[in-house]
Image 1 (tube, rainbow, N blue to C red):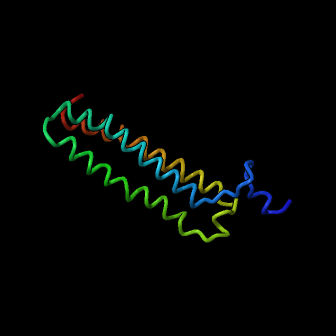
Image 2 (cartoon, rainbow, N blue to C red):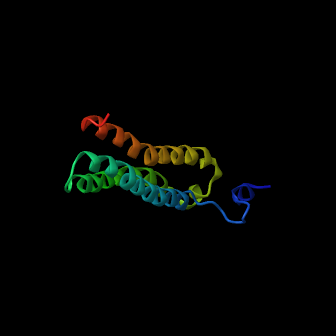
Image 3 (spheres, rainbow, N blue to C red):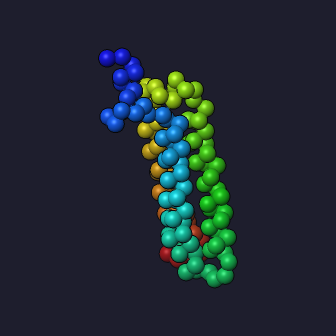
Amino acid sequence: MGKATEQVRTNGRVRDWRKAMSDHVAYGLLVYTGLQIFVTVKALSEGTSGLLPYMALIVLVAGIIPVCRWFEKRWLDLGDAQACDMAYAAAFRRDVIGLWAVVIGLPFGLTVIFKALLGGF
């Protein structure tokens, strides 16, 4: 069994790290935005009225985009041979875990900070 055989997934397709990371980033942005809407903006709107919660949402969503792009750019710069090299599996897994930790953890962390600043605790 050669290296090409190791690269083939069970469904018969070769894993492309570039595409896989782009997919994680896209889904991560959706999850992050949803969490921001339902967690952070809800907490902000309880303490203030007007446009502040919505402006905060825009700023917070715009702020996560460079972070997600950083994760994605690391993988988009791979060449065609590297993009399918299973030697990158551990690094890919590490970056995916880091991406999802930020995407899920940041809205809850920001909510705690906003509540503390607004005297909600």
